[in-house]
Length: 136
Image (cartoon, rainbow, N blue to C red; front, side, top):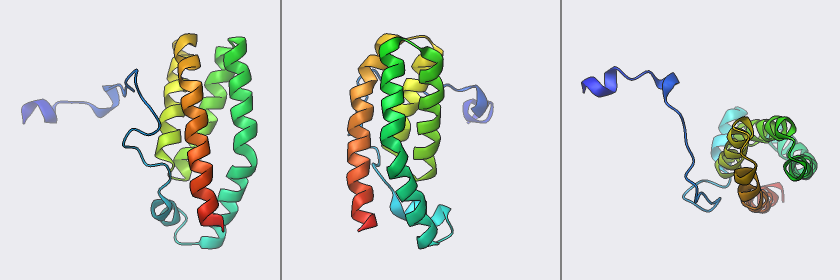
């Protein structure tokens, strides 16, 4: 019990295993949770999801270009933006991918960024499919 009580939650680092995949027991899209975040306003939820769908491919392309050029600061900024957007809509899998890429950019770990890029693109594809089901 003492070990749990003395821990400062702000000091623990969140790590993603090297073999992380967007299919690993993570939620692709938790629509009920997202709807709760917007206080049940379905019109607002649809508007936010549509805007996300309009922008995510542009953001992913900028991220890809940043990774390919070795621009760690751009990678950090864009992955942080994707992390925030996916977190706001309760898309845990994409959030985790973006978090991992953001962390690797802070650590100047280009190899990890290259490793995670296809995982992020798969998470985006899975999320877009899930969102399209809601939008129809």
